[in-house]
Amino acid sequence: MEYDEDNNNFDAAAVYSHPNQIWAMEPSPQDMGLVFTSGLAINGFKSVVLWRMPRQSESEIDVENGSRNTQYDREPLELEKVCSLNLKEPNSFVHSIKWHPVRDSVLTADHKHLISWSIGESNAQVTT
Image (cartoon, rainbow, N blue to C red; front, side):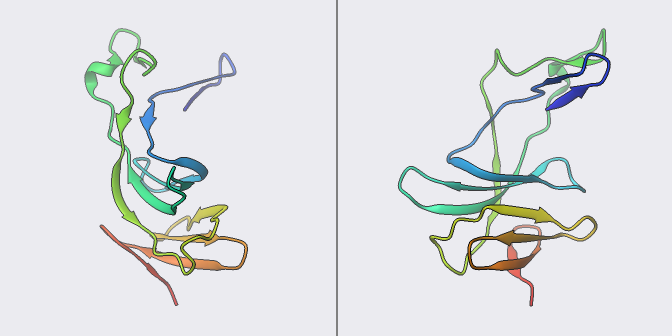
């Protein structure tokens, strides 16, 4: 999403394909290409996944006026799965995900647990 202050308008800068229903979404405050989602697949499997969003190519930017073309007329971009969180209770409904503002860690909350996770290059571990 992009916000245009002059026109008080939101616009979709890009559209991404996500495999599951999304319950919660939290972008990284340090890396705008990373986003966590919590969701439910058609088979009933619940998950919390860290995704990398591909960057827009230069051909998607209107050079004359410096604005981005929207993705409405193109196919959705594919997300790259970075890692999944191994939840204590695989069927728990993670309703909230919050990034630490400085460190590579997140908090997840479900109906029973508040868990701190340390995020690595391709994995996530519970912080004790």
